[in-house]
Length: 498
Ligand code: ADP
Image (tube, rainbow, N blue to C red; front, side, top):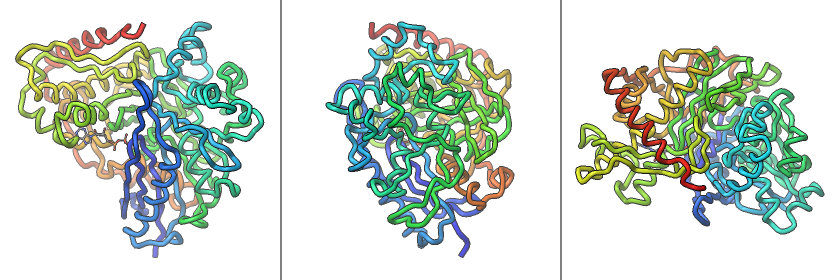
């Protein structure tokens, strides 16, 4: 039987295993959610051991559904929620604290303190990122400062840090029994600790951030054999590692300069390929590696990260009980012709790109007696589209590339109303591929490329096929009037936390 490639996609809300064939088709998949832990306002945690258990169960279940054995797999690749930080004991494999999730804002004070000396862009030239609670470095510091004895143990080399990719790779390759402690450049670049020029940990930032080098993983390319799996995947080469958004960029085959994709999940993340050139943003975007395949040069990207898009729909479901499932938001939104003059700016974790305001908090504005829950549903969907427009404007400014169409993926892209509104508010067509599971596919591509399953990027590009396309239909006047309303609403979120 022809071999297959497995990808483990460890996301913010769930973990999936998908098994692909050579054509990039999904043969089988399994998915399980894990708990979201909110110990206090602004804090978000996951249990790393639960995530490791989920990863093992989805692998076993996906193989079973595909009626395949581990020996039918040519390789396995990993993709993961980025920035989320785990610190564990290398001798016992026990985490010293829960994983601190990318959305968590507990390091707000630390970030302000660090910004006093040199401003928010203090490290931007080196790491491509503004100082923000989003990235791993401050989260590691928090664990070392707040867990009794952690700093001493870390300095003695007894504790390891990893993002979720590193945590899973270490466990998959044997854990306490010889697990490899590695990450790839796409994940490493989101710690705030990796120097983009050297692609190595930066001594000055480690010192300022208070993170000892002994706990950091080795930085490798995104596509190479890191080790062999044990357990359920015994003997299968683990050969791909990409942060989820970089994986989606690869899965969408954005291999040429100027090609971009936008992923609509918990948050939204748009990346544009800038080729072998590292571009520094003047418009609030992040500079980040897109991927590095083995010994080939690093390919760079500019990224616009939006913290809250799909999670606003979850909030309507879980906190307001306005809907009982995410797709229902579209049914409500369709009952009205417009937003009735109201806007929701979901600055739940502050605002990310292009503002980077950790002092912002969410608002609903323009309320009148006329507004009903249908308008709220509509405004929630529109918020995703306006935020994307802000990021796209920034991208066109920074890169000078005018976008011809936007390739989209992620859970929200099955919302037809949203996709049409997105095309309308951008004035650019929106295109969805047949395999919208581009994150898992990208990780599979990285693993398959390292092991010769796919020969080159043309092999992957041949697999991309369109499913649906939305053309802009709104008048220029209407588009700009709505967008001006949004921009005004955004200003109402600022300075909420003084
Ligand atoms: P992640 O990988 O970040 O966990 P997914 O790509 O699986 O996210 O997308 C899930 C998100 O998309 C959830 O936040 C959910 O609220 C949202 N979502 C899913 N289906 C729809 C829909 N039909 N309309 C609007 N939002 C949706």
